[in-house]
Image (cartoon, chains in turn yellow, green):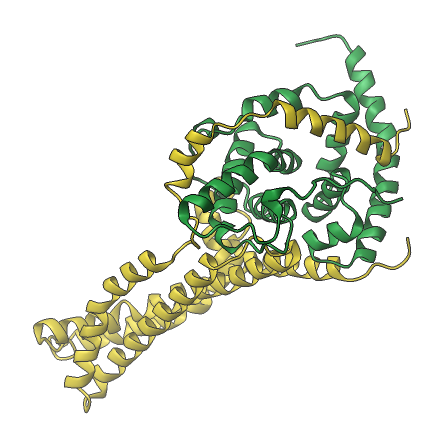
Length: 230
Length: 202
């Protein structure tokens, strides 16, 4: 048989007319179960943002308090400033990216929207990756030092003879962890077929998902360009 | 050759100035428009999803997105064109995140949509339509959108408006797809014919 796509189009349109006559819609159910539950207003990111800000405030207050109290003690000032900066940057990025996602206009053209989605995806993946890697370093020893000093008034540097060595080793381990995690994730990326969550995690750290997103961005750009010949 | 068919005619609810102001009017107008164009959701879903459950999730996601985006609807654009944009955008996003999705969904019937009727119709597709769908399954997400809109009878200019590329680019790509699909079509229909005559062995 040798039908052309134009002939198939006629058959497609005939089925479409049939679909039009056969489909029924229960408007009452639609109104009750969809329209009343999902606001027609743009999806608001406010609830997520408020929750995250409320969750972050105690940490910001603690770090701020330690900074103010120990402004002339670099041993406490430095970890507190780093933690404060990390928390503020991550909070700002998270809110910004959440607002971007909720603000997506699906009524835009396919190329515009899909490009926007991929760009947001790349930004989120990079944020997650660096939040995880730097978080391993900051949210262990520096955080414990600031927490003990800020809440209990305990100076862990001098609490025992063993502590300075313990702190130094842990910081060194935290710094070394970043390149090691990057290397290990590239080794594991794409190989954990039995564990999709772990796979997703290693792909994220290895930047594999970013590569996929960039490839799709490239594909969208090529698709948008004029093609030569017919 | 470009299709000259126009998929939807401007209705009173498609008219510029028709955007209502009160929430009740907004909902009423939305329902009227959705009722008229609901089949767009099913057709796009069938284009992107083979699995029945997955298709149900996709239609639901499209429906929610159409409703949530409705406040942004620009009356200068035809409602059907805008709905195609949303449906295709949701379908491509869904298609690209397939396998990494874990979400509770409500049966589509609870939203008042008649997916059973649509399923029944698509299940009884002719051999030609099945062969067409099989070939479309081999296309990527962007070319599927082009073929769908072509089959729907949109002109190159209208397809360009949905996809966001130039009309000449659309024409070139459609012509290439026509040649490619036509070559595959005779092969696919032959396979379907052969399978119909094979004895049932399981």
